[in-house]
Amino acid sequence: MSSSVVHPCGCPRCRADEPHRDRALHEHINLLISRLDEQQRRWFVALEAERLGRGGETLLAQITGLVLDG
Image (tube, rainbow, N blue to C red; front, side, top):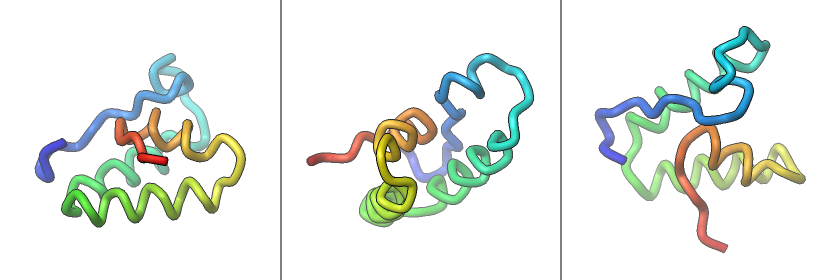
């Protein structure tokens, strides 16, 4: 993922193109990580996935397109 490209959210709710309360958050997450380098992106996504708890890693992978290793 290039640091100048903002990834579109790939979660099922955003892909359904229906309004939902987390759409703006997902857009902001992708905007933020587009400004970070690779290591910073991975740290942020891992931290956010841990904060969300169960299913967080899967959801963040859908939102950002970034897959965390182990």
